[in-house]
Length: 128
Image 1: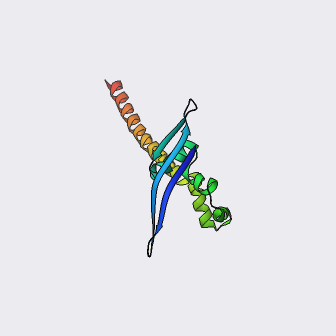
Image 2 (image 1 turned 180 degrees about the vertical axis):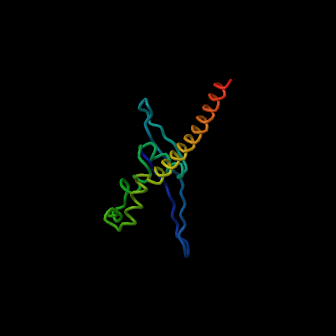
Image 3 (image 1 turned 45 degrees about the horizontal axis):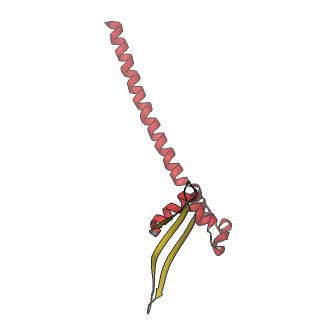
């Protein structure tokens, strides 16, 4: 995977203007041939983690971490927790667990209703 981005930064009188001009992504297909795609930067930010098979947080905080920010693991507790939550996607994990619990409770409630209906039907069958 080769990724290249072309930017334009111009300094006007009192402010700087940033403009992304082009993004090119070069990969190899199954036959070993080079495939080049020209994409938007936003698309490239989604494609690169998928092609490298790592999360965006790993790329941002571990692989492409700036030298000055490399000591984040020695920082204060709040920053450290935030980084680990991003890397290990704990928010998504917690949300998924909550959804599983909710689904389980719904099915348990439905099972109680069906058991009660089954017992009622059996009682009617024995009376008939």
